[in-house]
Amino acid sequence: MLNHEESLDLVFRALSDRTRRALVERLVRGPASVSELAEPLTMSLAAVVQHLQVLEAAGLVRSEKTGRVRTCRIEPEALRAGEHWLGRQRTTWESRLDRLGDFLAGPGTSEGSTS
Image 1 (cartoon, helix red, strand yellow):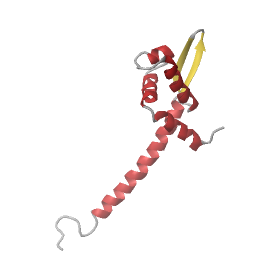
Image 2 (tube, rainbow, N blue to C red):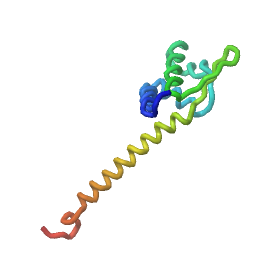
Image 3 (cartoon, rainbow, N blue to C red):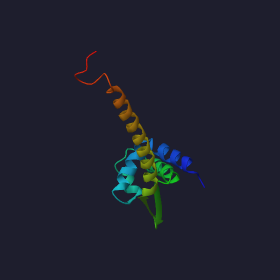
């Protein structure tokens, strides 16, 4: 079992590629077959399958085969983990910037002060 940090690394590594981000964006709208996912892309079906395998390994996508059709679905929990991490970073930096703003606006810098 991968630990949380390794899982997060896989998620961000998978999302670092624009084609994989496009596949995730499409799957957020609902399940799709591999053929449907490949249709708008200018690459071979085999290349799309490789991208989907990276997304599956990261836990972002799940697929199932029925007959000859492989259907892919988004796994929201993996996206939530990345979103949660980014949210924590945003909160930390907003707090730091607020403190910097308070410091810069401290005594002696307010309007009407004489120096």
